[in-house]
Image (cartoon, rainbow over the protein chains, first blue to last red):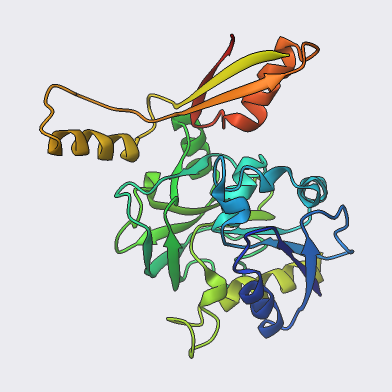
Length: 221
Length: 77
């Protein structure tokens, strides 16, 4: 299974996302921000980092990059998309996910290992739903906000995928760490599952299940 | 050519920790009486006369501001 990993100017975590795909048994395909070509991949990861230096707003400029017009169109046809950290910000700016990510409530850049509960079955969480996972969080603009109607809809329709457990690092409303699109194929989360796939370099290997999940979801599709 | 200003502010219901930090810093300068500060962005554009108000509104709401969390005002100078 081929999983595309996009690189924008300023992207940092494309390497680890690609490595996580390989460890899960997939083939990582490098995608370039300026191309209009998804290279026939079965799923796309929008990784973390500081695309365009977080200029204007984090993820704002990346959200209108040529590759993102293809991602938006393909997501409309059911392509699974995962946005990690800056990737989550990009997916919100692109309108693929509701709400927005704003400056952390305590103004600190938070870099720590964080417990999450996984509350929804999506293309990226079939191997994980109902479990807890320990993954790194590292961001300054991770507070998830949405208006009351949107929050209610997310909660009522089971679209809150990840929730902070044992402490909220940034003041996210309802302790939301990640959400899904209505069809469950587009998911965004602020924490970094790709940094929790190897006991040598991460706090756990819990993150690997997101990547094995999508390989199962794309094989079945 | 025309000068256009776009001012962008966080919506009133959005918590603004940067504004809070500025408020706190004012107190450390020994200044009292400032109840609240909210921080936004001010954009100055130079545009052809052919760029109409509808286009300016698109510039504001599709790029300069995120309508989920921000309000904006477009003013021609």
